[in-house]
Image (tube, rainbow, N blue to C red; front, side, top):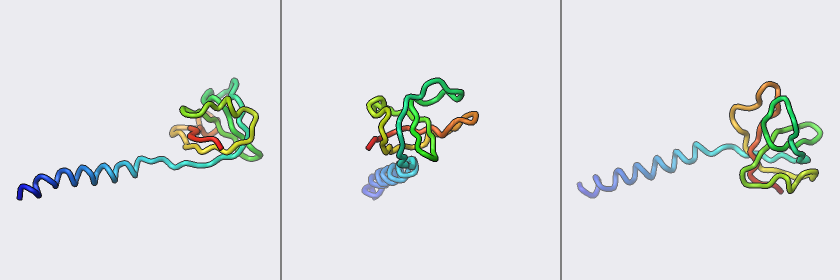
Length: 99
């Protein structure tokens, strides 16, 4: 009986840790285009933009120096930042990787 009482809380902790972490993962997407510095905008978010013929996004990164890719056509792996777009601005993405 003591064994069951000892292992039950451990099992429950492992179960809830595994299920909670899988539900908090965000969806990532890949966007191809040319990275440019943001400049002055009416929506005032993002440090750079990425655009191609039919899409335009405001972007930032906490892990990649986007200045290294200015003017280049690249593919970024990013996740959408919740709460955006604002006031007619573009979607706002957090860049995780650049290819």
